[in-house]
Image (spheres, rainbow, N blue to C red):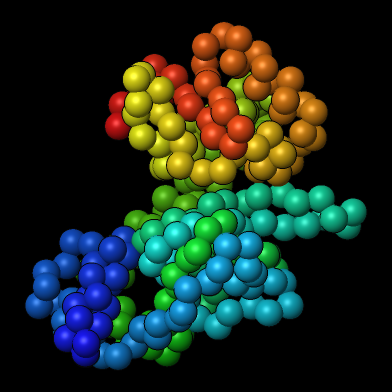
Length: 233
């Protein structure tokens, strides 16, 4: 049982994006540092964090999906991002993933691990290759935020919906019969939450996209015409 647990632990480490290109020997060396704490599964719809209960250190999604969102004064939800396997979140002095004062909720059963700030600093000093991977991850997160802001500033709702769906298709989509099936429970309300608009406005745009063959929909899933994607998966 212990040997199986150790193998599972190393497998999970190998799935975290900043560790993915390391050799098995390097993975074992990191594991021996005993820096990463392992949590239990977080059930669907459970809150991992609230603005009043911020997690210390940095955390990693091992399995599952997390939704990061804020609530305005009237209680309206605005989805900031969706984190899946390999994604990081948290705040320490040397780095921020923009997850302070937010809600983080499990969209499905999710496994999370964490590392303290002191342990993280020691790990980055001892493993410079990880520091480079982390910089890349932060850069990609910032690029996504910039693209979202550009969409809000320069495009109408139809273009913003298409951009959101193609981005989700690139991250979570599987091509089936010329359409990318997004592996997320996407209702019109959830899309509205991501864009900070009303459900009624999104429903109107989705009806137009469906008529134009840009998307296909079912009760809680959306498929995007693969021709709309930057590149086929």
